[in-house]
Image 1: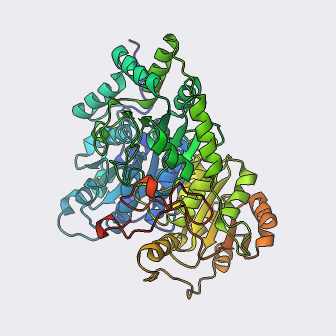
Image 2: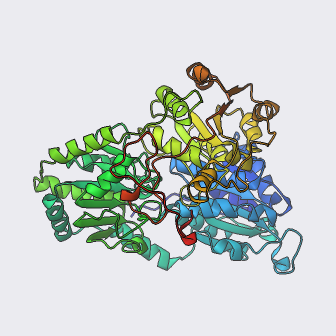
Image 3: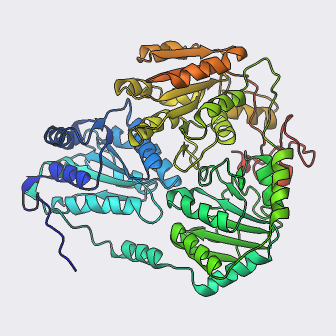
Length: 605
């Protein structure tokens, strides 16, 4: 085995802050998102000096709020597949990161959050801006390190990156006391913590292969199927397995539905794509799930927004296979007949190789025709003759210009679901949204992070008037760094998704969700934050022209669209209900007439 060359700085005495920054550089970090404060100043100073010496190779992007920094780091990670980094101070700086950390954990996003902390001698004394970060973050992060031994700082930072990006990705939090940052010691340039148990688990995952006998069982069941369907989740995207899925589904032509987080795992314009399933999935996608007799679940977890009623989900499937990197997901919600725990990419390629070697072929043309008929008969649709601007029309016009190649970020609410339903995505990592947590305010800072990750891509934040308010301070961040981010606010004067539920399930009582009396002028706010293009669109006839000029504008651009305040998100599967009980609205056909049922309080949202 060849000896690796020693790190050029090995043996150099430096501060803990300089060590930490050097490890960031060694890990390939080229963008940091963060807000300063007293307990993190030594590291901020180290970043400044590093950039002085290295031609600003690690710019530090300053948001309006620490939560913005967390979502920027997450947007960077989601768009690139690399670890995003956020750097904040102690106390409120750290606690403002709780939501982004939980959001990243829920959606399996690799970020490293570095928090300043009061000196080790002051921990536990209720010192100024002290917060119990390990206790707070321990419940929501993949792992938390409180570094009290400065000699382990260097190794701990490397280990944080290792844990964040390996296995099921997730957020790792480093709590770094100020005296550890100021400590001086020898930099080694190598080494990590002896997390033996974790590495053993990762080694088992990496070594986990699909045995020949399991391959045989899998293809025997697939071969017996007449209506097979792939159900692809976020694990396909996070596991960088989209190409393997494409090759598998092309060789053995099985139609594919995706979850909200799995959007982009297959090209939505491909003939085998049945788009998104679930609570607000396409009617044809949900009917395909009901009609299939064999379901292959890839990196998906049968969550409540997909399998609202697990016993009735894919009720016609005689065989269900489940692939996941996390063993705890197998049989957690839905009992399956065949499973594999390991790396998705490797597992799919193993099955692909086995199927090719055995000459596996089946004629599923009748099933393909059935899926085509579902797509045609139960297509997405809306009131195209309405005099009001329909949000679906706006998205269709943007999609006509972007052709599935833009990065789309969203807040959370109706606009999020409309975007998932009506945009095309030709490849993975173009769709960035808060899936499991459903965090309002995610879209704008995530767009900033995505633009730094993919500088040549068109990045568009599709937001709602309520959602963008949550982190509207990041409008100024966009212009401060002259990012060509495009921001669309679909304004329906309130919490649209909440209003939809209130209309359906609470007799139309709009408790605290109607914001029609609010006086916010979003266009003036955008202009005040430096947007040279800031326009309000309120005439349907102007939609094509305005959207064209908005998309083609060079630099940051803001567009507020006054949409039909009563526009709804359909289809909709009520909580705890089966796809047969799906509400399709007035413009999408339904197999059966569905009476709206008020769900139990325990099932709401």
